[in-house]
Image 1: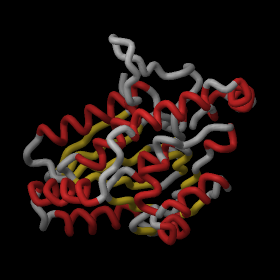
Image 2: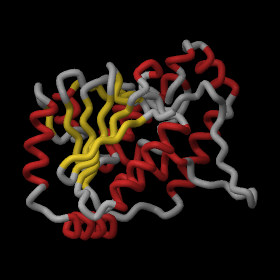
Image 3: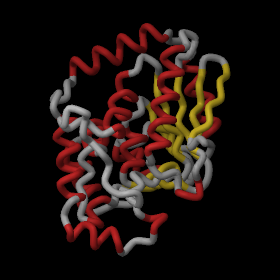
Image 4: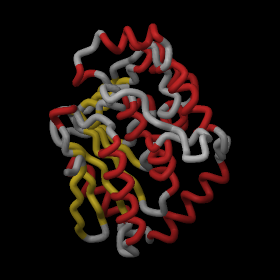
Length: 250
């Protein structure tokens, strides 16, 4: 069973989210599959680009909460960063270029998944919406990756108002790098440009960016605690419980 399919061609691995019935929600399986896609890209010296895309009307609906609270405890009893946070970190730091092609709804954690990529191409069907506050949650893990693109205040406003941004609005906010009526055509043009830059150079550039704009090394654990603290609130449980099961994502 898989939630992500991989295809390879000319130095590019495409990871397609393939669970449209669940709105491509973030599950343990999907996270495992995306980590495996990164493993495959990093292990292949000929791979320069990892593309994330999706089948169906949703790019990604965020974390599926229908299975309960994620386990964050190590065998020692110490808290660990959630796999979702580790995935976003890897997308920003891997030596390959990561591209999100969004041509459907990206909601809650799905916005973070796109924002963590090096480049975001928004097609005509793209919508970006941080919906966590509507069910009493804080997008603690997605927000740092959104804010590094949009700036702190713009990310805060988009979260507080649960703004629904189309492709043009996402481009204006800095959340997307290109808004287009032809996402596949835009991807092809982007891949031509990237073919002129070797993987070692990309890796060096991303390493330098991480040093130039460092994140607090404890931010992942803080984000995990913040998310789980809100999720433990009975009032939040009641808000989430009002949603139909396929909609229980954050």
